[in-house]
Length: 136
Image (tube, rainbow, N blue to C red; front, side):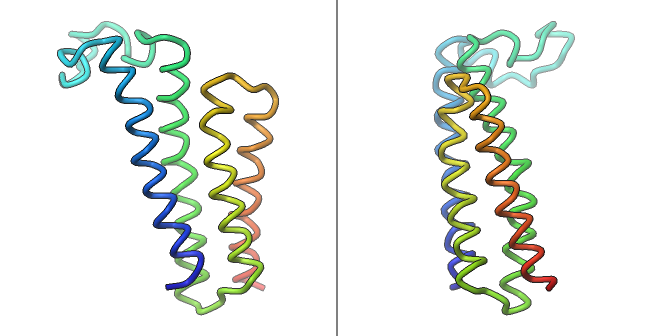
């Protein structure tokens, strides 16, 4: 397995950790009746993310953000791995991405401004550089 694929597997596990970090406080704050419901607007009136504490809302948004970032990172890993272009540089970029995503969780949860945006950018840049390395 390439280092990039290893990091992708770890990033997927990080997503599971983020789910727990978000779901546990959400269930404690809202109750299982709401979190297990179909979440229809007619029933809830406002989205769940608007009904939780600020920190839990941030954890929800960080969870969603990682899904969005993970899509692009997965593309980068697939391009690098399938084209057999794994290098020390692309492996380093993958590890930087994962490090940024780990740091992003507390940065978002605790409202680290402007660091949260900087950390997000580092992960995005690492992913972009992986794709560019495979193309050139």
